[in-house]
Amino acid sequence: MLLACFCRDANGQLTNSKAEIRKEPQSLPASNGAQSIAIEILQASVVSNPTNVERLLDLGFAYYEKGDFKAAVAAFEKVALIEPTNYQANLYLGYSHYYLNQFNAAAVAFQVATKCLSATAEAHYWLGATLYCLHRYDESVTVLRRTLVMDPNQPDAWFVLGCCQYYQKAYQIAAESFHQAALKEPTN
Image (tube, rainbow, N blue to C red; front, top):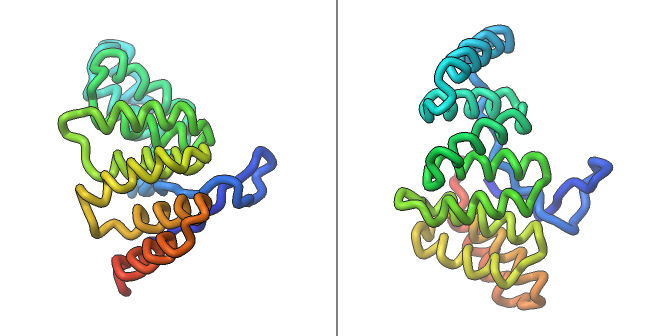
């Protein structure tokens, strides 16, 4: 799905100064009550074994799915301290920081994720999108082009690339990127 080139400012109002590019958390099938119980169980498991990476990741994912991004950051940061090159921890640490509008921290986490052996085009895309939010258009273009080499069928990457090119006043190239985004967008 293509997303608008807008972000929320400090007052929660949409502004075109940054892109609103979000990876929406997938809602868990469990109710909030069941979700809270699962989090309590995971917290107890982590207390008994604070270096258990699998449980810390599960706890981070549970917080992320619940929308408690500050708690998710804390869990994913613990994993990253234990295993600095853990792809999932760094990727979701980036998503969590992004949701908190902490774009500099998100960019750092996504940068680490792109260096992991299991890095995918997704990590590169989110790094590029975050750099766009930071108005670092030249860097964003470089990263997004790398994303599109890895997976040329990513409409969101084409779209954000077009946004960067637009702000660089490369209007014709931006139009071509927007056109590619539209061609790659899945039809319903």
